Length: 155
Length: 103
Image (cartoon, rainbow over all chains, first blue to last red):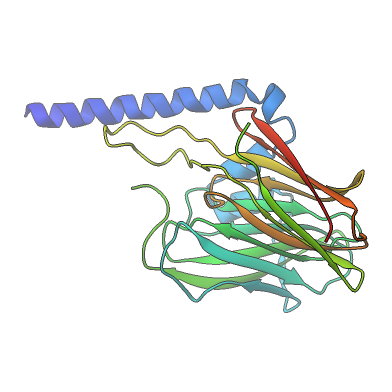
């Protein structure tokens, strides 16, 4: 009986702590996160993220490629690359559908920078990875499923 | 100030490829320590790469970029000896900037 009460207490204070952290996160950004797209990174689902990025419902495109392993043994370090052959690409974003927050990273590419970026991301579980690309003001998307055998988020 | 970044920049046929390895914990804020307390989020939010004074890449990261983030990209132009400067900022307001000459 007591044990149960403990659990409730714990989860209650955990939630409160999270709330405080979130509040702290909202107060500090004045200096630190001035330009950081908080709403996009905080969005949970794919649809909300796309909305926050102003992408609406992007069209699938064969000219966008997502590269990565078919099976990632360690979800904490999954190499992912995005390349695209569309003209005038100004932005590339990597989204992971089943992560707690879908958006992993956005890249703003000035003229002269090739639409070819590679990075490493964390994945909590097997999920589709989406590459979102902005070309001539329109959004395009491509996807790839990566299976994760050991998750990289949480313990 | 975090630890130094490892940056490599090489020019080949008029295209410069830059590879960056940043040293950063990238805590998601989802993990719990052994006592069950949530480890607060601590991750790089912005990273900018410049060739001379010109920005060649600016990124925004979320916490789901892996620990010690790796980044590779290419841009047209750049010559041997030119400076590439990479700087980042994390959600605690910490920043770091490192530069390297194109090989």
